[in-house]
View 1: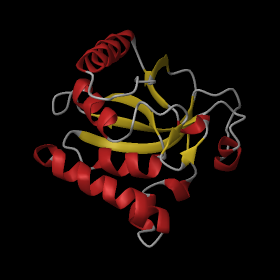
View 2: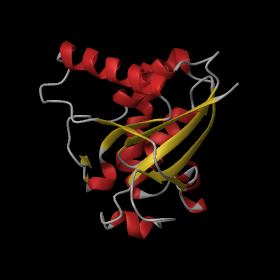
View 3: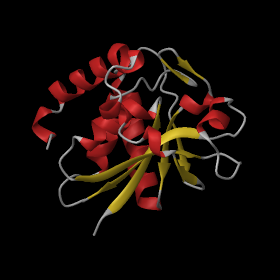
View 4: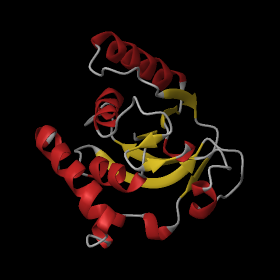
Length: 176
């Protein structure tokens, strides 16, 4: 039986690609979550007025990869100490957030966050929010597999590609 996880970790193009490479991950969809407007468009989310966050919704097989392992990747692929930004991407739509689907996920995410805070891995405080998933809208088709379909894009070349290469090195034993 599959499960789902939803994370906001900056631009969904990079995050989507990293999660798709993991064993046990069945599907990853970019989308928007946590806001107040219905069926938002990318352009509307980019204004910062919808309350939505760019997210990835991951369908995974818990017999092959655990929710805790997904959290480990989540906290690796972005900087959880930056409030409402990741690199040059600035705005509330890029905030760091775990949207939990059930109470078990909430408890696991909160325990993992406390463990990270205690470890003092980052010099600055972690600002990742842990919130219930109340809304989710799948992103427009052109965002799906964006990195694969647009490798020549400057953002993909300068920002996304180096992140993916670093991710592949660190998580090489967990890749498909």
